Length: 141
Image 1: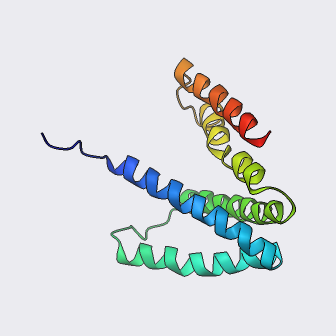
Image 2: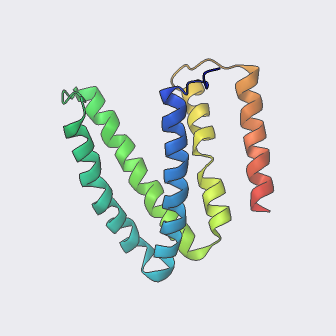
């Protein structure tokens, strides 16, 4: 019997989970060792050339439309705000609280997707949002 094949979405999701958890742990340690704003800036300085290098060596299209470029820039703005807020939170509070609340971004993104971008609203998705909120509440207590 052949082992089940993992979809690329699941694989990338797992890599994301592991990378974000390591980022949070190392970010916490960094924000306890140096000013969290400086730690955030250093993290971005390391991440930026890696992201650009990935685009250049992959088959990514370099065509940028005005709408796509603007949306990506706005996403980058909110990434920076969240990134800096995470480091500031880690320097003043528990990794458990900051990471659990920060991880709720996927719930907020799902809600925004349904309300603003017209993603389908289903009972399963609504139940998932409720259960995620309950889970985070239990983690941070």
